[in-house]
Image (cartoon, rainbow, N blue to C red; front, side, top):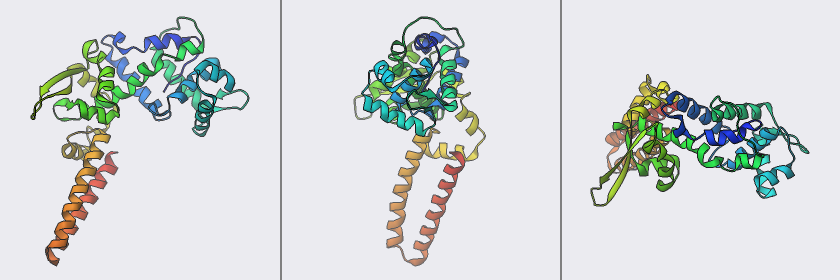
Length: 295
């Protein structure tokens, strides 16, 4: 995600460390929400090189492809491929010299505001030094948002690490690495709990703390779904309000239900089989309507 202007870029790289914000939950909330919007334009998981290009071009004002390759230390082919995708998204323009479009400058400005935290620039250095250490810190915002929504909309504000890893599409070890600062340092958003499994072994769970719950209650998802009956029904059925968890569990339920309904229709005589078929069609239609209204 992200971008910046002038020498500020280097300062932002260090400032983006969230634990340093202390108990500044409003700042954390605003940062996470803004970066989430940027993620819709530059997919953090798949477009990290695009983000680095956006940052570099924004930092330099304008630059050539050769300069980008030099600053980023990437293969020319990879840079050209990312530039092609960025042009399709309307983020950069130009051939000999690349510049950000108006849309690209808006994304750049959002990232500057978030990562500077409203403070002035500090430090000096070239664009290479400015972008090389950003992946871990910036991407953490995106995964943090997913975890907050998943936990905040789940029963008891708690989920197994394995479920959270599935939501964020990270390995459990990598996700724990991202979440550790918010367990051990302020603001403490999560509590890590280890329990014995039913079949032996140990399972790791994460639960929202009071501070974490305060952040969740101000996220757009909570505000949007708070008064929604459709969202409430889906949350009860899926035991979570996170879109990825909800849709996955609803899809599994529909698959099992369809198999059961098909077996009953094949074995029952005409009147009952017709009733089963019509009932299942109504159930599927209702779930589809609830998903459409909510998401």
